[in-house]
View 1 (spheres, rainbow, N blue to C red):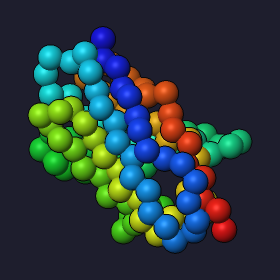
View 2 (spheres, helix red, strand yellow; view 1 turned 180 degrees about the vertical axis):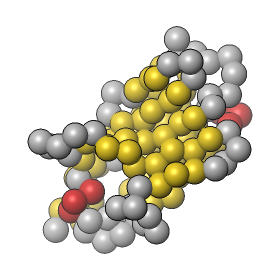
View 3 (cartoon, helix red, strand yellow; view 1 turned 135 degrees about the horizontal axis):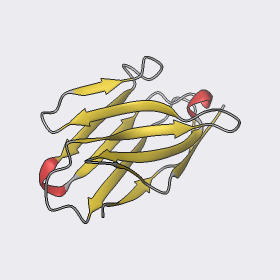
Length: 114
């Protein structure tokens, strides 16, 4: 059973930066795919970015060029560096892991004030 523990997030002014991290525990192997989703109030959860063991990543167009995803395979930890934040980036950010099933973190709030 994989457990995901997120850290980071908080309140920042538009144009600022925040960093999220998510550590996976309970896995005896490197998790093939990890990433981040987000859900704004009243909206559906959406993909932010994912990254594979190889380092290959996929990033949503809405954050491309501003957000960077990375991972430490030895620690089964995934990171999200968020720069040039906009008010529309305000959401609860969820860590995601895919093995033979999906796992989700508890979510961490990011608020970007204008």
